[in-house]
Length: 185
Ligand SMILES: O=C(O)CCC(=O)C(=O)O
Ligand SMILES: [Fe+2]
Image 1 (cartoon, rainbow, N blue to C red):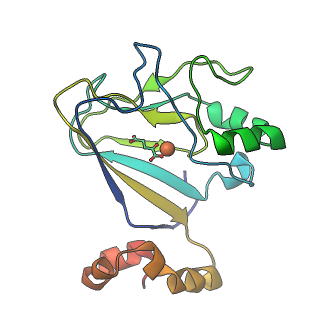
Image 2 (tube, rainbow, N blue to C red):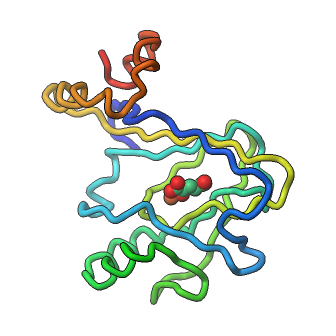
């Protein structure tokens, strides 16, 4: 996913989804999804320079609130986003459903049920969303963003903004390995 060395780009985000409604469920056909925004760089050019990873802390069973995604949809989103009207519409209402879908997209959302310790990588441009958690067991995941390390100049510049991307108390207590992972040394 990332060519060569990499670093953690921001504070990891823990997510807990308790029993109940989240974004609809596949079985009822009312699952509502979104994308995390549009990139101005084509996907194939970005590939190899970043990775979004979800780490699972407890088993996620089917209908247990799992992340659900439409495989391959990021390519279609990229094409569609070249149309200013589409962009404007989605910037107002960033939603995709079985009914309100993209022409030419094979609507085949897949629930990503994983065992504890499982990792799921995805591109934010893919159509995705969590789903209703119909089980008592909370869904526990943590999101990590990694980025490819650049040349010395890029890395020095990144260090200037590290306090905007990481909690200052965390930065103070990091061991050497962690400092290296976030690009502090
Ligand atoms: O909770 C999830 O698995 C999805 C969250 C998400 O897609 C987001 O925060 O953009
Ligand atoms: Fe998202």
